[in-house]
Image (cartoon, rainbow, N blue to C red; front, side, top):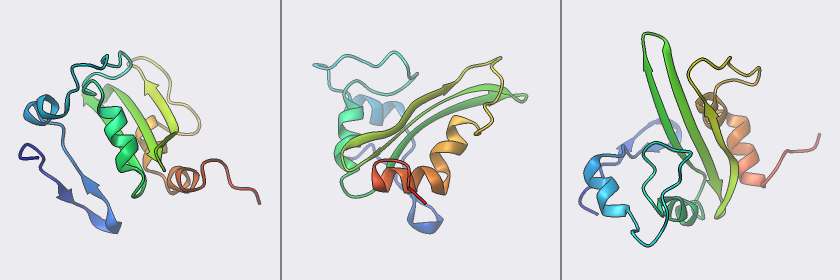
Length: 121
């Protein structure tokens, strides 16, 4: 996929910025676009679920200016949505468990994703 620009991060993670070209390349015109995300291409959630068979995958949208903004996230593992979709809209108070992005990127979220649910003990 020529439009994809994977950026390697620490701890075995990678970032795939959603450019306009990538969005166009992965959009499935036969699928409806999800209304609860700003830029998630139609049908791309199915691709993310498929990719998650290799390890956890998070889709993250975050936009802030001057300390005010919004977040949308979802995490998949083993082809299943395991966290979210979570949203924090402008003007909403931050939940005690943290912002959606913090929750998606926390080690607990990845542990939940890897087990399919909360760990006992």
